[in-house]
Image (cartoon, rainbow, N blue to C red; front, side, top):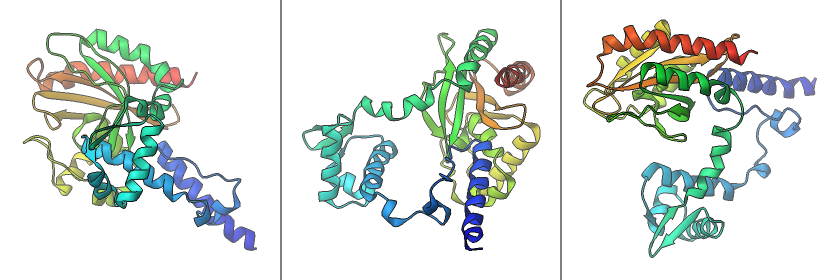
Length: 292
């Protein structure tokens, strides 16, 4: 009887994690073989020093600049002594450099996530289709996955023109003002929307960015209903994009693919009439290829 009580939270946790995975969130399933995880994380299993080190890495990502020891301590909530030990460890391991009073991350940190982004799988299968679509519409095409309230780009093909849209693998942008981000957010289970809308920061990127929570929910409802998203200059002035979610035949969500176009070359109406059908056909072909 006691074992059944311990098992119920685990079953719920697994179901929740699988639901999140299907909806596109980067969520790991709990280890069902560990008795401790059946009733929650044992405090003895939590490595606080590792957590503080990861927060230092995230701080550099948030600020996007070099920082002094005091700034790192302030951004992360660490003491100066604690921040110093973490920074010197990162320097020793090659993940950071010190330039006088300033610290900065090195390109070596890309190794921590690049293997996940470039690993053999769905996006390798999708790549020829992405390349073909880019050649067909003569515009850049990108694929992304959802990470909390950001989109991370995992594949793409840049069509080289005098004025073109280029997004590199590993680039991260706010999900609320990107076409890929909106189709992925709209694909989350409806029951998670209230919490999602409460926590998401609708940062104003241009004069056209939707920043009201009520209006943004209506945008997501429309995207969910129509199955695609068009974003007109909400991330960057002069940039328009249209996106469609990528699913398997069983409905599992892998990510989204978008076509980005400078506004001087196409109108929103033309995007929907000309680009969208080709994008939808490409995504359908990818879904068919995934199941084989």
